[in-house]
Image 1 (cartoon, one colour):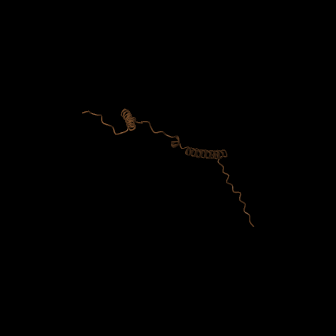
Image 2 (cartoon, rainbow, N blue to C red):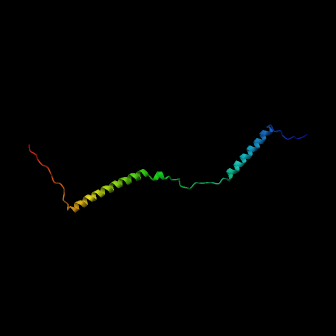
Image 3 (cartoon, rainbow, N blue to C red):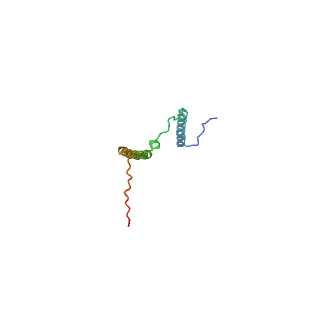
Length: 99
């Protein structure tokens, strides 16, 4: 009795495709097995517009400039009052007219 090799039921093209898929899958499995662990320890990226609020800084600068200007005006008034020896200009120039 002669022993024959078992006949494959798939055509040649399918067998070639099957071999290609298996080779691709084995390559993939090798890459997965050889993959090194990677942990990202860097801090998250910071964006300048999130912690530098330019609008708020500009408004604060304008507020300080108004305060500085008011302080200068007040200083001039106090200085002129000191130069004139504290005299006030509160004379009443009211004239009463009788009809």
